[in-house]
Structure formats: structure tokens, C-alpha cells
Amino acid sequence: MDARSREAGKGRAAARALLRGTPPPAGGLLQSAGPDAWIAFDEEIRRHGPLPEAVTATFRARLSARLGLLQPKTPVEVLLCHPDGRIREAALGTPQPPPELVVIRCADWAAAVREPARRLLAGTLADAPAATLVALTPLVLRLAGRDQGAWALALFEASLRTDPPLPAATARRAPATEPAPPADHPSTVLARLRDSADLPTRRYATRLTLDTPVLRDRLAVRDLAHLAARERDPANAAVWTDATLRSLAAARPDDRGDDAGGRDEAGGRDEAAEQEAVDLLIGSPLPSVRAAGVTALRRAGRTAEGVSHLADRSPLVRACARWLTAQDGGDPHDHYRRLAADPAGCSPHAVAGLAEGGRTEDVPLLRSLVAHPSGSVRAAAVAGLRRLGADPDRSALLALLDDPSPAVAREATLSLRPVAEDLDVGHLLSRCTPKQPLHTRRAAFRLLQVQGGTAARQAAESLSSDWNPALRRAALAASHFYASPERTGRRGWLRG
Image (cartoon, rainbow, N blue to C red):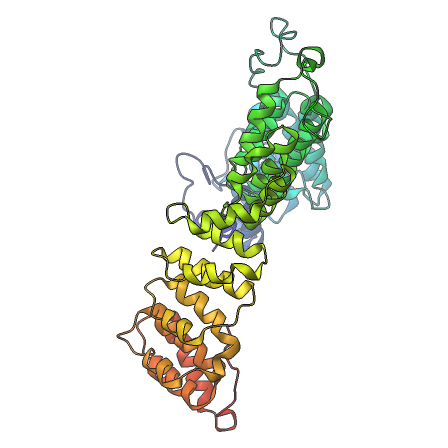
């Protein structure tokens, strides 16, 4: 169950508790809950209403007097979600209705409910703009797709796009020394929304920031790179990365990265900030952002650094590093061979990069690495041989099914699948016993399923009581398959 489903479950549980008569918690209903919890709460109340007739009649009597000085026994949270629109309308007149439910009522189908809710929300926004925007924007975004949901989003967006002047004492200072804007300034609020744990909110804040020139111009290239590097959502990180690259290109238009010195003073460039921005991109955990940073090294005049990224863990970054190294006049292939031949410097990513070069002359070197002490290097070597189309050494690959590294056994299995029908059945069946390691049993089982026939059925029966749940389920499914008389001997089942 994902986070949004858990939040929705929390909202439904709170609704059922209130309908049973359980009083709201002392800290407030759904304290610290996300937007999905409030939406589910509203839907649950509406689905299981109306309230008992006695309660409804009592409350309707109080409606006629606009609730008077008496508070209804029914919680206001329930009344704000009542199926009867007149009750929802009157509940908006209670003191301090939950703002989350007010936002939901702003998208109510009934205009008599919708209009007072909108007046309430507009007043709350005017009284406490920063707190309201930070707390309610995720919910407003969720509701924006409803027929009447666009109003609240337009209200919030207009507030976020305003640009009140900074205090006079700081308005004319240089960006590097300018203090942070006040807490209620739109740029400050957007910064908080960009840090939101809610992904739609972060994406919205990103778009709004970059689409509004006066807000975008407050972010220096270092700020853009920092936002790109810390973002964990690939789509949102790509937006920040593109903005960073545009800013770098504007600061250094000469694509060769060798524009004349001295333009820093005349053009107002911050060379240190640009270099730091590139380093921030390279330090990102996301391959797409790192790849952009490696590519940006050329414009930054640091082409020689490409070799240090040839063994990156990402194929995308390795490809960019090969391009950058070639731009500097180097030969990426030579670097990879030196890395792969160096026992101390060899890494699985360097081995993978060597194979990505696609040269058959590297097959002997890769075969030698199959005996490397590191399991990850051995696995990369087997995968590299397969990538280069080297003829599989069946006996050597069969022996690798017993390798202590599951990654090596997995790669050996992939390499043996094209020739699985010619493999030694007895050798594979002997690996489908409980005394063998799990990854060995799994590899042998998969190869036998490619073979099909009697041997595959025997392997399935042998492993149908395996202690590993996933392997046991697969073996039981295979056993049932082969138990069908018309399917006995059928080949090629369970190719995953």
C-alpha cells in the first residue's frame, strides 16, 4: 500500500469513528494528515450519511436560528460533509471550521455552500497568507480537477505570483549578500512549497517559480543547481536541471568554454558560482542530473575531468563521460582497458563501460575478469561478454551457477538461456536440491523450465516444498502446469 492509500485509509477511519460517536482527538481531527486523508474523510461521511433523523431534525431547527449560541452535539467536521447542502451551508457559520474542509466546500456542487466557503478561504488567506498557502496548497491541487475546483487554485496562484517589494534596507543589495525575504513573502512561501513532502506540490511550486520571471530571477545559478541536485523525483529534477543549464549557457555563451577572461567583471558573472553549480549537478544521486553535469564540464572549461566519470555507476553518465573524454582528445577505450587491467582500480562499472565500447578485441580481457576476486566485477564481466556477443563457454558458465555471488549466477543464467536446451540435465537437476544456495537453485530451475519436458517437471516437484516462498510458488505453479496431461512435455514455459 502506497503513502496516498494509507492517508486515504486514515481519513476513512476517522470518518467512521466520528459517525460512531467517538469524539475527535484533543489535538484536532486528522492532525498532520495529508490532503488524501481529508478528501477520503469527506467522501466517507457523504457515503454513509445522512445522520440519524433525530440528530438531523434537531440540527435543522438550530439552522433556522443560525445556530444561535448553542453548539450542536454532532461534530462540525461531520456537519461540513453532510449530504444535505443546507446543513453544510450552516456548518460553515460555526466558529473556526477546519480549513481543510472549508477548502473542500469551495469546490462544492451547491453554490449556496460554495460561495460562503470561498469567502471564508479568501479571508483566511488574507489574514495568514504564508501559513494558509503552505498548509492548504496540497489539498487545493488535489481538488483543482473538480468542476468547481479551479477557483481556489487561481486564488492561491495569484497570491504566490505577487511580488511585494523587499524591505528598503535590503532591496538594493547584491544577490550574494541579500538577506532572505520575510517569512510571508511569496518567494519564501514558494521555497517552502518546493521542500514539501507532497510531490504534486513540489512540481507545482517548481513550475510556478520558473514560469514567473520575477520569482525565477531571484534564483542564482547556484540555487537552481542545488534544487536540481537535491530533488529525488526524476521529472522534477529534469526541470531544475534544464533551468540550470540555461542559466549556465546564458552566463557563458561560448560553447567551447574558452571565452576571454575579464568578462567576469564587465558582464557581472560569478565564475565560482558557475563552477559550483556544475559540481552540484555532478553530485546528484539521479543519473540524468549527473549526466547533465558531466556534459556541462565542457562549457565550464573542465573537459579533462571527463575521465574521472568513465566508471560512473550509470550507463547514461558513462556515455556522457566518453563523449567528453573524446572532446578532450582522449581515447575512452584506452582508459577503460587500463581500469579493467588494474586490480586495484577495477570496478564493475569500469568493466561495463569497457563492454559498452563494443570491441571484440576486449573479449580475452573480459574472460580473464570472470575469475576476479570481486563478485560484482565477475558479474559485470559475464554481462559484458554477453553484450559483445562472445560465444558462451557452456562449461564455465555452468560452473558459475555455483558462484557465491547471486549476481554472477544471475548473469550466467542469462547467458546460458539461448543454449539451455543443450545443457547437462543431470547437472542442473543436482542444483535443485535444498542443500544448494537459493540463487543456485533458482538459476538451475529457470534453465530447466526453458528446456521443458520431464526434467523441468522433476525440478518443479523437487522445489515445490522449498523454504523460499517465491521459488516455492513458482515451482508449485510449474508442477500444476505439468500435471495437466495435454501439457506434459510442452517446452518453453516460465521464461522469466
